[in-house]
Amino acid sequence: MDAGKFFSETYDEARSRFLEAATQAGARIQTYENPLAKGPGGATLCLDTAWFGPADATSVLLNTCGTHGAEGFAGSAAQLAWMTTCGPMDLPRDTAALLVHAVNPFGFAWGLRGTENNVDINRNFLDHSAEHPDNPLYDELHRFLCPKTLDEPAMHRMLAAGARFVELHGQWALEDAMSRGQYTHPDGYHYGGLAPEWSNTIMSQIVASELSQAARVGFIDWHSGPAGDGELIHLCFSNPASAEFARAAHWWGREALDPATVNAMWGSKRPSRRGIMFWGLEAQLASHARFAGAVIEFRSALHKPSPAKAIRASLLERWLRFESGFDAPDTQQYFEEIREDYAPRRKSWHDNVIRNALECYRTTLIGMGEWGRENARAAD
Image (cartoon, rainbow, N blue to C red; front, side, top):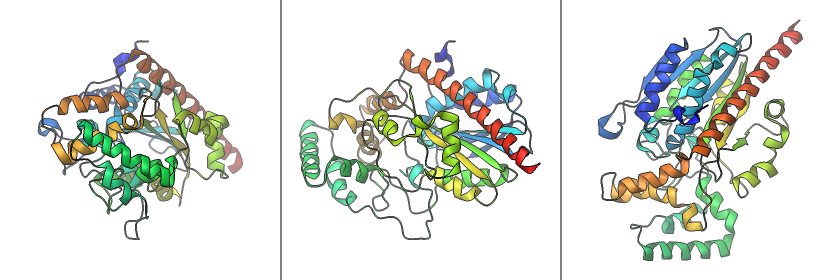
């Protein structure tokens, strides 16, 4: 199989191919246009869904991509490969698949992780009427992680300040404070926002309208970024003592979900999280459906030789948004650097992403079928 044929160069191309493949495979398609933002050249931005299988299925695989915009290229390619290699024809009895393309179309179109408001969607799914979670060390980080220029002296100052922070608090504290989610600096890293983003609202609408009849919902949210070459990292956010965690472990293997495995593949102890979509959807479905699954990362970036290189993609995104603008000189080079972390053009990466994605779809849907049969036997 030529895995590269499933990958698109732009959001517009990926969207067009998703819709064409879904139509040819007989899906029921819904389109949600984002009225708040535009893509390059003023292009329209949309979140699209494709439903395969019985309309009244009580088991549904919910599969999303593009939650972190620029990471959508791999997830989109995985969805396209599944739709065009007879995946929809192999759904178990009483099982449907709902594919969501481009949860965050702004980020996907521009090649950035955040939304049009610099919000990290995976920090935005929480109760915004309550007090937002505190991140006490982030303010200290923000002062030196947001340089006005990217020249060598500025980078040296940033690294020196980072080293002092690590001396005081430790390396993990830096990684955790930077990425767990913060709600005080709209121009900062992993900003969670103070209200539901458009993408959050639309995902909640989709769950309410499409999954009201579901008794069991499996979940795969495709992401990319950690260093590697298309291997999968399974980030299951269910309670480790729960039946839902055990369900995901049955699908993908308990070792894959083991924190030791995840940390080794991630490259360090993973930071804590706030406001992730997994928990938001889980809570919304809790009244009538069991919810099991994971955020699944395709490892993609090359290994970085220094801390400055490790955070460069995040640094560049913030600088493009708040210091230079998208049309300044050299910006295309910076967009390409970001893309290379999340959606490299290596043949080996393309091959591994598609092979691993199709196997993941296969084992998940087998598991969804078993789940449904278990419940049918229990009902008898």
